[in-house]
Length: 392
Ligand code: CMC
Image (cartoon, rainbow, N blue to C red; front, side):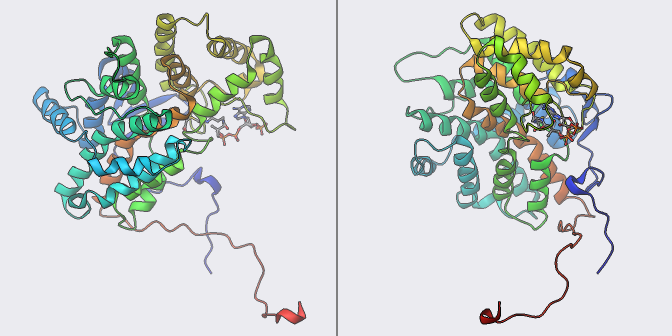
């Protein structure tokens, strides 16, 4: 038996070296390949950030055009994959459908499963980025009982996704540029976040040499939990439970009560103890979308605005450095756009796919890569003899 460092939750253990994303939680700094997230969110757009994360540098105009055209070439799903969706119950959570369908891609795309071949890795990466919006949108369409909408490659990534979610055969669907921009920002702000639980899951799965689609399915499964990507759904459900502005103090009091397990969802972060730089940009987007859509008729959005104000003024949240995180504002935007709460985490999964894939590629080309195998501190029984059943 060896002596191991005990680090529950890996709060102080670096499991890899990475050149992709840098976070300084105290300063509220998030850099992708050196570029600050606020500059990327305001000046760039999702597919350009995908290129940056995957290949390490911002693309030239020609490189971006080539990359976008490769992605748009792969937006369709194999027609047989429809039957996967149709095999689920209508009330299946879209995250459950995504875990299943993305895992099943390993059975459809055999030319991207030899992970020792750089070309195959490349094809798997492009396929995942291209198909994830279609998968997420179809999970939604199936859930609401509407016909699947095929991708339109003349639209940008975000507009195409909105159309696949909201278009119906009976009407022409025109994407509002403000909504499309807000959607693209949600994608961009969620694109990568270094070694969070789902990314670590993808790396651990891939360390055994597993199929890329299976690794990403594992990441989606991990993201689903309410302490991680599921927080945006949990946050909106909490706002609905609060219901009206006059109930807010009661819920704030519960969040502060040590004997009550209730927490304000969408507040606090493991790494950002000052502010979440993604939340700052997301708040601007939320304000724009709320101006466009109006909150007069939406009590959930009214509760959100007032809760943000009251929590920020409360010394408990201030002293514990609990600020609204990215999921608080993304949830508000998605609610205003008309997405049901069950779609919030699938949208996070879609956005984070590029981060997972970039980290997967980085790990596979790391000469120091080993299979992940954490150790434990054994605290159970010491050696004892088996007792026959009649003597117990
Ligand atoms: N509401 C009320 N109190 C809270 C909250 C909250 N949302 N978050 C933390 N606290 C308190 C907690 O009770 C503890 O108090 P004390 O020191 O008196 O015991 C203190 O703040 C520190 O909390 P912690 O759980 O030790 O901190 P952590 O770094 O382990 O947890 C967290 C981070 C995000 C899991 C937690 O803040 C939380 O549960 N937030 C709500 C869920 C949420 O919004 N998650 C999304 C995270 S951002 C997106 C993503 O990365 O997936």
